[in-house]
Amino acid sequence: MTTLQLPAATDSFEHYMSSIRQFALLDREEEHALAVRYHDEGDLEAAHKLICANLRFVVKIANEYRSYGLRLADLVQEGNIGLMMAVKKFDPQRGLRLITYAVWWIRATIQSYILRSWSLVKIGTTQAQKKLFYKLGQTRAALQRLAGGDGAAEIAAELSVRSEEVEEMTVRMAARDASLDLELTEGEGYSLLDTLADDRPSQEEVLMKSQEESLLTSRVEDALCALNDRERRIVHDRILCDAPRTLQELADDYGISRERIRQLEKNALAKLRGVLAAT
Image 1 (tube, rainbow, N blue to C red):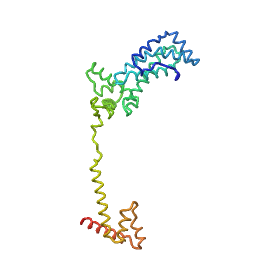
Image 2 (cartoon, one colour):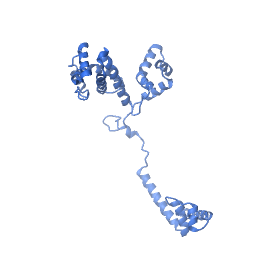
Image 3 (cartoon, rainbow, N blue to C red):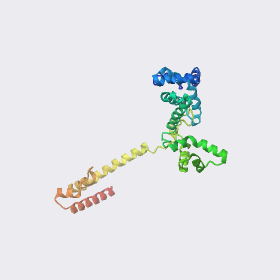
Image 4 (cartoon, rainbow, N blue to C red):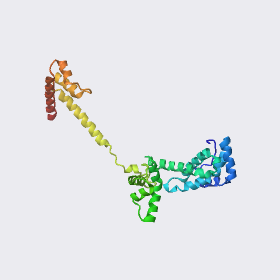
């Protein structure tokens, strides 16, 4: 089926419509003969004629989904894929017209495309969610006309789903994805991205923090000079190094108790705090 050449709906849509109107409709006998040729012999030319003769029906079905805000040309392209799949799987011996069978494939591919395009987040994953996506607005409008009610409970009862699912789908369908690069006013270059607050620190804040850290490092180095060699090593190994050592490890190095190392560490930190407070 991939070798077939069909008019492209992505061209000017008027030109596309003009092109597909040139393909004559098939009567039941012609359609059956072509379907048999493709089904039994794999005749691609027969498949091509079947598809081209039914392209206008795809446009008719795609028009039913224009309210979802997607380009008609894109809907038609997806519907054409469904039509091709239908021709591929169509059994002419069942006595149906091709379009009677193909309409289900066409709708399925269009609906799948709408669900994929509606949001970056999957909006219809279960059967109930898919039913709600396509039937929610229609059912609400019908209930308003007939009974004056359009609450979640009434819609849920009509569609045989839970009220919570109706409320969830109502919220999810109320908002569409929007590009942050979308201009708020065309031509002014002001987009949604410009309205977002920048939580990153300013250059002044970054510089100030860097200077404070540098000053603190310098003061700590000066304060360490007030300690003796053993105290400096204990403070370094216990606090300043990337992999702090335990009291027991230092006790083993110096041949003294863990408690003595703890006391030396406490005294050294007290000296450091005193020196830092005085500077």
